[in-house]
Image 1 (spheres, one colour):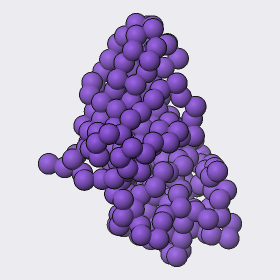
Image 2 (cartoon, one colour):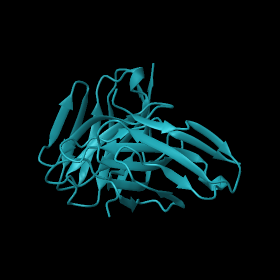
Image 3 (cartoon, one colour):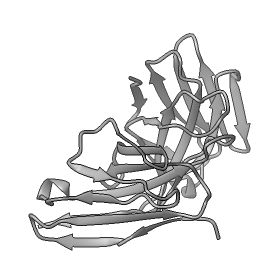
Length: 116
Length: 113
């Protein structure tokens, strides 16, 4: 089965700095890689995702990069703000031909703290 | 409003009791999932279902069972609760085709004394 490793487990940055979280996966067949953000006491929510036919995707201050050869993908947050403080989870799965969500294998999470 | 609902939100119960955690979704999704998560920690998939009358065990061994008799309903049952079951349980759902996103419910925080 799929195995996803995530680093670092905790990350502290100054407001305005960039933050990078890295994940590696084991199953070369995986083709869909979402990132979830979980604020304290809240449910996880999707913030960005990438499919294996794309190397990079951006959404305002958030970007994700994918290296299929090396089987790793990363989340980049620029100009960090206090509201970015949360736990971030990467995940991987094999998306079927007709689309639709399948079971995800999650990384172990990164606690990001943005300090003023 | 389309959403995922979990009840109860908090439950404190004694060892040996049978409990059922409820999960319902009005998203129109075919696929549903149960995760176990200690606060802020890793999400462990314990059960999932790709449709009515279809259930599978997840990656984390669990003493719980699930059923999927109706598309919108995916309850999780613990026949005999133990202190090791103390955790947060998150229900999620995703579409059968098209979109990939998993939508999570608010969770049930279970404490077994």
